[in-house]
Image 1 (spheres, rainbow, N blue to C red):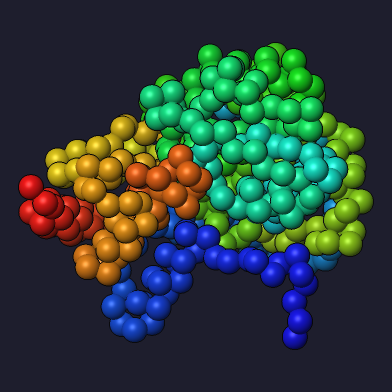
Image 2: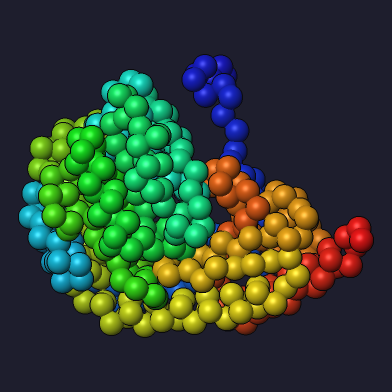
Length: 393
């Protein structure tokens, strides 16, 4: 079958290639210790499952409202006001099939052909594919670790052109685990206002901040009108398989998304919405408990990384990722990740999978048990020791 020409050069990303190798090794009966995937190892809380099952028994088995059930949109508003002081109305909320679907819909609605979107490297690579897939042009801005992987105002201005239409922001960040302080958020906000840009702010990891606090971009003065906030229940409530995300945005954008959904998804799974509504209204304490677990895991892993020859790891403030530098080993990100997988049986993601700024780093997801993480660190320590012993004098 002949494929569309626009996808002729499509190849798997560095992250996807690692995932494929893990599947092959697992199928062959040799599963690696997998520190590559950003999915909590906790299962969904049983009472959330019961809430969804109860809704099915009550007859919630029909098409949902296009923007999502009113009670879920109200729960989203209440959650963000309760945790981050953002005041939103249900008509400013759209329920999506996960956070990635939300981002796709936004780019589809806001980008004209050739419009540019500023993206801060290192970044979650599907963003760039989504921008290109909707006729836009991703413009990566190289950032520095000492600046929390965020651009300075001068770097923003140098990257912008008359075609710049928006900014993509992600804090807490994937892959870096860094949390942008309010000062940097305010600098980005001032630039967005100066250039009349929209900001797509992916805050899916907002519940996982261990040092400092999360700044909701839309809650900054004057930013709600130009911001699309994306989040969901996948990470915070361990509901990745439920595929339930949402966005908060100006009402006119929500109206367009509802129109577009009539020929795309025609709404989001009814029972997932009912489970998510219950989760947002009842699970704050559980979310805090799990956040503390991830913080402890990241601290333990970082302490191990910093004892390894050729490895340096800056403390992360949020999410559940560490982004250590492996430059001291003499290997590139790709070489390190693939050799670690094949020689030590530990899967991580090469940093260059997240843009050129990620070269010299790897991403470690602390989404396994403490026992598994420490076993992986044992193997990685042996691997780095062997590399050091074999380096030329």
